[in-house]
Image 1 (cartoon, rainbow, N blue to C red):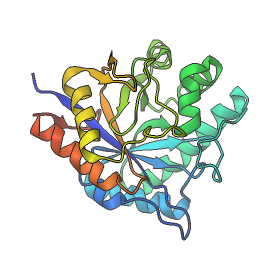
Image 2 (cartoon, helix red, strand yellow):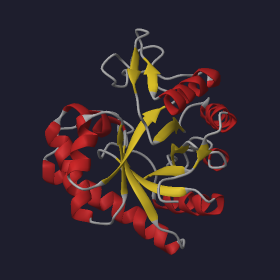
Image 3 (cartoon, rainbow, N blue to C red):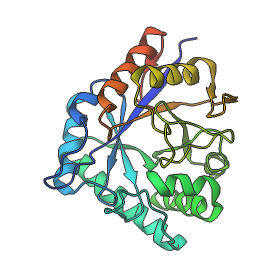
Image 4 (cartoon, helix red, strand yellow):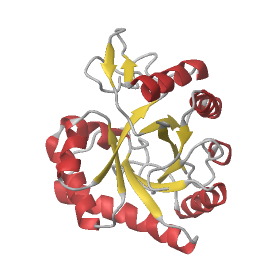
Length: 254
């Protein structure tokens, strides 16, 4: 049976005069773009420009929602109430959905960003608030969640359309969690290393951890980040390795 896998990237993270990433080039090798919605990066001009670029490239679009933390790029922990988490999610998804409409396309998924994504893996109230936000939206969107976690299982049990996500360019610990970006080597700079990890996840359903242990890692989508200096070469290397291995790159629902 042919292996079909989504390849996603976090894009649209420029802000005003500050340009970040290689969005147009990366869109040529991915199937889904997670577009920042103004809380950790981006602004209305960037959001519309990124959506339009995704339409031209034939890439499915997702809302990349975050804590309200522009200064910290959404990577700082914040103590928000469940209602704040729900309403922040609704606000961000609503904004991007309207930009999709005016560009003649539709929103396909939602993926949390940074600190709130990692917090929800270990903090059940945060996970439940994000799930409640998705249920409140009731937009029949895919919900990208970290593979093999209770967060993903809870979202599936709630009736959401979940997509299990793993990372090509991030190091995992022995619990199956992402190693903190503060630790050296937690973010891969070598395109070949990222490509090898993507192939290991895609074809063998496993990942090699920081200690050298091997953990199960069944994923529907693999992420390559778009905010590093190496992101373009990494995304190209991952795409090439997967295609050469016989994987068909396709977004959920496409």
